[in-house]
Amino acid sequence: MEPIAPLLQRPKLSDDDPMDNRNKFSDLPEPIIHHIFSFLETIDVIRASAVATNWRFLWTRMPHLSFNGGGSWLEPSRQELTDVTVYERYKDLINWVLMTHDKSVSIQSFRLVCRNNDDDHSVYRWINILAQKHVRELHLQVTSQTETPFTLPRYLIASDSLEILGLELHQSVLTIPSHVGFSRLKSLKLMDTKLLDQVLFQNFISSCPLLEALSLRGCLFHDFKVLDISLRNLRKLVIDNGYCGDPFEEGLRECDLKIACPNLVQFTLWGPLAKNISWDKNPYSLQAAMIFSYSWEWDELDDVSLHEEFADHMLKILRGVCHAEVLTLQMSILEYIHPAVARPECFTTFYNLKELVLSILMLEGHLQSLIYLMKCAPNLQCLSVFIEEYESACDYILEIPDEAIECLTCHLKRVKLIDIGYYDDHDLELIRFFLKNGHVLEEMSIIWLKHLKQEFRRETTQEVMRFPRSSSNVTVTFSEPTQFGWNLSENYPKQI
Image (cartoon, rainbow, N blue to C red; front, side):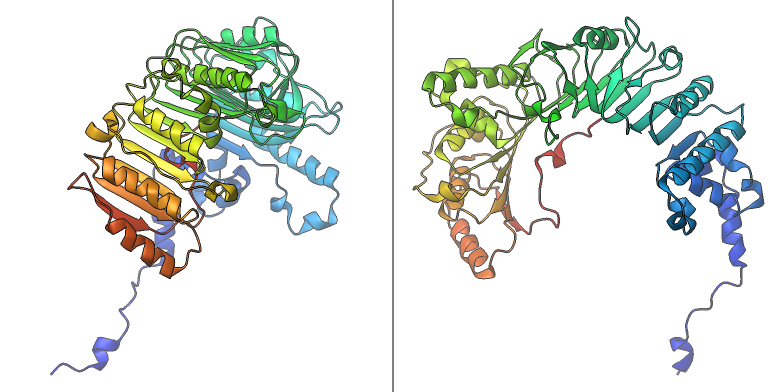
């Protein structure tokens, strides 16, 4: 019999020098190391140069540079330094890196957090160097303590290499040269930026012939009468003014929105509704649309005719995205379009729609709008419904009439109901409706509300399992909520 002691011994560790593993890593091809280091701050790449002899000057050949503005690299001495001194040393670091960077290596991407004050033009000097280094991707986060406008320098606009530009200006003004645009730019992202001239901005983006992605997040369109986005090659458009501070929270409230982008693939509209919206030909290639628009005036509208007028305005937005394959809607949309449910001729048909994601309150108007949207989507295959909490929504008996809806009869295969448990009987009625009327349903996924008692879950599960089902193939599953909850955009394509 084999002795037990040897079997209990720990496996013998390798006699190899642990330095060998480090050497194996340092011997990787330089392009692979560059890719790995591209996820690090530049100061950390410089520190890593001490790890291996052949890395000593690696940072000077890095095509990806990033300076996040933090002073952690000065610890522990930072506590003894003033903010001005810390920032001066930060500028010294950037100057040193750019001056010693290998002249034969182009900079593919550059990320920078910095300041822009009247007496400091460092950022423009750095941009000039980057333009000479043929930078392809540039992301700037600029803060001005003196409310100094940030000007797009002509030597950057004249660059024939820049393809991606992101600017976050912390509510500062962006000054745009007249009648000039980027000849090679494919992606433009403006965040927290104040735009003062409607004509200049329209001319500017129209002068970017290759632009494929445009993102306007938290921008203030000062004195704009119309925000005109007319770009033939644009594929992704994001207009997001949700959760902005005053006065940026105004968004498009005081101007019209015109969209003429025939090749649009993704569209996101988030924030206060524009005064009006117009589409110059609906984008037939649209794959995904997300509408999270709202109005501060809605609750103040008592006139029924004004509610109908508002519904027509919202339906105009939906008609523009009628070719989408994936549509995500915030619950206010269901409330706004409800006055038009009695006028079916006002609705458009979403023939291409395969997936619908939305949030609702358990209110009769919301549910009627949901049912009507399903009637307008005959080829719908997947439906995800996030049920918002609203106390007064429980003050009535909910009965959803059974009816033949084309998508339920022929195509709807998956239904996901999120945050089940707040409305009790109302939730059960919604589940019953889909199981009874979903003739080709394959999966009903029920995700519980957080912190529900086990007894309630057990009773609800038993009740659901007794419901009649039109589909013999449907599987009903019950799941715990995710740690961080659920949001409408989790299944939406990656944003720019």
